[in-house]
Amino acid sequence: MQPLDRTTQISRRRMLQASGAFSALGLTTTALPLSALPLSQESAEGIKAPAGFPQLNGLEKQNLFTEIGVRPILNARGTYTIITGSRSLPEVKRAMYEASFYYVQLDELMAAVGKEIASLMGAPSAMVTTGCEAAIALATLACTAGADIEKCQALPYVREKTKVIIPKHSRNPYDFGVRTTGAEVIEVETAEQLEHSLTAQVAMIYVMSSPEAAKGPLSIANICRIAKAKGTPVFVDAAAEEPLVPNFHIQAGASLVGYSGGKCIRGPQAAGVLLGDPALIQAAWFQAAPHHNYGRGYKVGKEEAMGMLAAVRQWYKRDHAAEWKEWQSWLDTIANRVKSLPSVTTEILQPEDLSNRSPQLRIHWDANALKITGKELEAKLDAGTPRILTGAGTGMRPDQMASAITIMPYMMAPGEAEIVANAIYEGLTKPGNYQNPVLPQGQTAQLSGTWTVLIEYLCGTGTQRFELKQNGEDIEGMLYGEIYTASLSGKVHANQVTLKGTMPTSGYEVRWTFRGTSTGDRLAGSADMGEYGTVPWKAFRF
Image 1 (cartoon, rainbow, N blue to C red):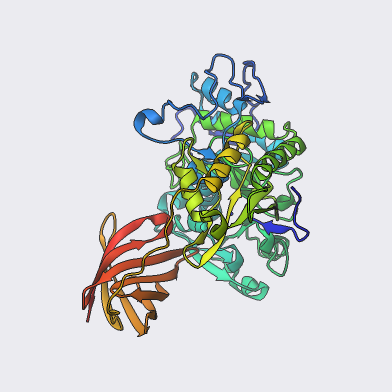
Image 2 (cartoon, rainbow, N blue to C red):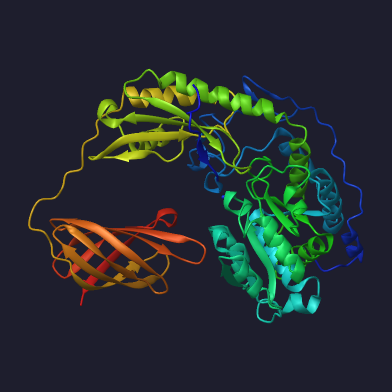
């Protein structure tokens, strides 16, 4: 299997002091040692367990999850939080297990762990967080109030620094970490707007590392240069990136950089790392648990702290070239299994940057030839045993039969490529029976006009408004929500209607798909909100 000539690019994304030991925030304590339980490495049989642990491969039919009715997943999709991120390393499991037997003073622990992580990751200072989202929030708090106890205690109601600047190219769902502190987001699109917006009320600038942030007037380097002249800190969200040394974000002038622990580093899922300026790191730790400040909710346990340290240690020991070669071999195994089937072609997708850095395999076929679409195959794999999740499938009946699925080997284990290959082959050669959707027959409902819409959320009822115009079976219009709006388009077949719209929100979007039945001046059905679930709705025409 060879890459396409034109390589397809993908990117991606703390206690009241009884002892007076808060002086440990000087970050000079020696790191705590881990005892040397013997560990085996990955083999053809999978990841070997530390001594004294049961040998598991994640595919056992009966396990602690099945006992409570939860079906485990063979992860061929990637490091998504919804499917619990990455598979932690054996060294991480050992560290977390061992740490659970001891009591330590958390200020002393974080100082020691932070010192070693900073040294390994090429930064002046570091701390462990409860994931990168917590790192974003704590960075914002540190830049807002420092370690001034009065300013910390007055948050979020009283603050001198009320704003955080985010370039438009960096708006994303994770900048909720900024917004959850109560800061006002100022969105900028040009260097001139950035300079004009850098007032005394600005706490920091947030930037998500991405290809867009690596070039142009609002590149990370240019933002840091402009911010330095005004003395404004810059936080770089590098959650899914490989932590290269030297850290090029800090070299570019960033004050703080955040990483997820549960992605490529393969540490605890509920952990992350905040790197950067020692004073701001100290302030971020001051804001967080166990200290009774605004960030008390971002509590890092001793198990996560030591697990994160173990993962960072291992990152700089792992043979990353060998890992890449192994991932490619797994993709070759899957591609070779299916490439002889009618209409099947394959391509390799290469990562565009340091985020989610792994090759991926995309399998294409004609569903007219193989009688199953990508969406149908994706669902079939999800429902199978073992349960396999791949990248989102494409293809839809009756008129979008060009189909594909994508395989991400990033978090797979030895032996799983053969399982995935056989399951995909089985799905493509024994698809079962799928029928084109049957369109309802009858007189076409007339839906033009203004409609009051009631959304029955999981908790509470929302009131929206449709403004619809109809031309035959085609519908266009607007969705006016309680706060946001969206353009709508859709179809009506007899009395069955489907309306779709994307509602821009602050840093993100909600994609609505309304499906319902018309009974004159009333509509009722279900509204699909993507990751937010499906809820009932009904509407009444004015």
